[in-house]
Image (cartoon, rainbow, N blue to C red; front, side, top):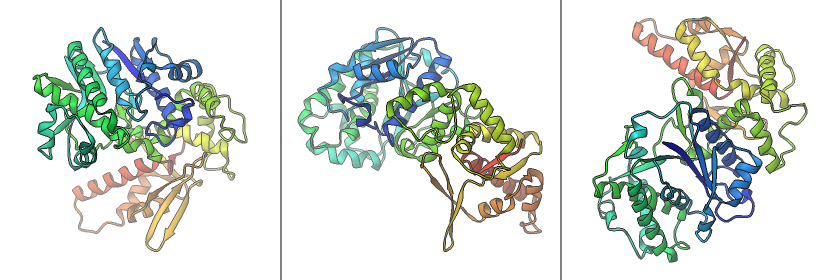
Length: 444
């Protein structure tokens, strides 16, 4: 089964004119760099379906490693650019062999299960439609002149289902051609409504909900990558870069993940760490003179290794916090939580250290730590009492074993062994979070 991706720019002249749901168009392209490269790491056949501008950006400029490129999506340029799902559905309809379409905000660290790749219909997971879907639909439905009959069940219940299509495909090509016909009919007949509704929200209904309802009507079995059924707006853990590749091998930055600073910065750090040459090409698009700043950096894996080694051995002795320091910190942070968890699980001792580049903010009883970013994307982490104790103890390098013994002194005398174990687990989880968020590190 071949892997395919689609990128329709939406009839714009410059890639910076559309953020595609991300905090900025820059991070949209960083996502494409990571998604394409991770797919090619595990699959030989990864093909791109795009338009002329998409090919110019992803292929000519970024040089993403697709095995084949199809420039076929300019025929969609009469559609509103916010109707991004039409490009995906058009791409499904063009397939002449079994396929798996993977969104550009999906990242993998392993192959997909063999049995899944043999299924007739495949999507990421089933999701439960809640008031979130209903509220979007209530503002769209009055403006539609045509609604598929398959929507009857959805419009008469508050708790239906839809398919999340972060990945979608299978061997049943006839179904995909039929589904594409019905989806385009839904969109085209309602062309006069495009200026009256949120087309971004409309995508959800002619893509994910219609897919589910058509499969149900025709008794088609859909196989899912994940069997859990989350509510439509409650996707938890799909942006956990600190848990790849040991605990998770699939991330999908849907919805608000695209605008969550720690998440999109972690994605950027991962690309900087493992695909620096692609990041260098990215900067030619955005002409960012502030990225490197006050030091020489050649965007190579070798240079990254040098920065990581230097940061690991000297970060607690540096007196000046500059651009070099932040870049070293960022690429050193990739995989740090996983390394710390391994040390914890194997019982090996290590030293923890609070990085000096961040700032504590206090307003009355409210406290948070401001994590500084080299490009100005600072973010805040609220602190509870345990966090305050943790960070106050490790202003200087401190043995992990000593830290735990110190924390045990805060417990009551009559606590049970189970209570102590639960408490240590909570402390460990906070340590791992702070490591992932660039607040703590370990000494070499």
